[in-house]
Image 1: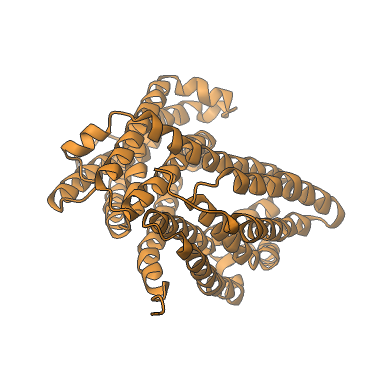
Image 2: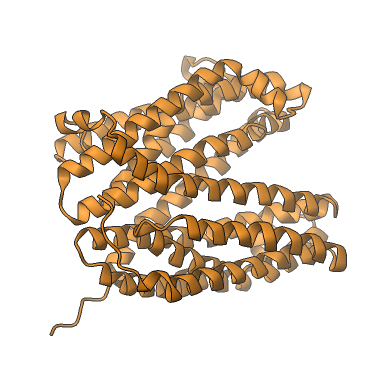
Length: 448
């Protein structure tokens, strides 16, 4: 009996482009903010930032929908049922565009939305202008997010990376052109970033369409895909059952983060600045963990589609190894260069000390976070979504927020940061226990 081939190489081949995509997305946002802050002023940056909670809410839902669709597409792809892949992708895309269309109509009321979000009066006009364009062009944004997710579900991470690279480069060129009105372009002020994003996304989607048609890709926008865009109620119910919990999980995390930043703000502006710097580093360190979770989910779904659910154990072990090596490696670098990293964002030596101490407290727990997401992703591949969500929600609501509140009052700012390792440890132990003691003993079958 032959020994199964190791999964490390296919994992790395799949992971590398996805991790680069995450880095590119973060850099795009960072550089766009630099453009606005440096070329227009701090009010421009504030005007864009005030729309972020609403934007996160919109994107959270479509990313959850994409997560659910990815599991089903992965299972169909593993079974080599190409028409079913198209049917799932088409149904999901139709619902995505309908949702985006509603948001686009809501763009007509962007000023009222931002007023409800308590946008300061001095930036309300600029913020409403930016939000209006972002909302009206939401069908483009949602279509791009969904298509990227679907491509990854069939094992293609290179095409989304190439598309993102082209979109990012074009967007970073167009934003300053619109801000300054260079080359005869209109001066669009704060809305420059929104218009640049919309134009670059439209052109990228066009190029993606031509590329996929030329390659006769399974997700090419052909006649079979168009037929699949007539929503299938059965498929849609399964996609929503898988996707809504993922969206809820993202929203719960964002709400908890708002509570924690409120606690940090209570320790003064130095603590807030340190919080921003530490989270910048944490974001990059956690990229491998998030990418590994997506890989585990897709590899697991494809294995189930092939009728080889027994392979999930090997997939999880590989995901754990990758987290220890990749996330752990970045954690080690973070500790080694912690002062220099904080110095990239902060110039005041006293604040650098605060930020470095906070980073030292929390950084190692990124490995625990990665292990937790590996177990939950494996269960999601088999259609189990509500229990992992309940565990995550419990860890955040019943552990993270109370522990941060209690420790911040007992030992100060360090207490807020200590809440992260406590939460990630709780989450990891509970997810691992449920996976090993309950889920792994079940019979896992295809959902479609």
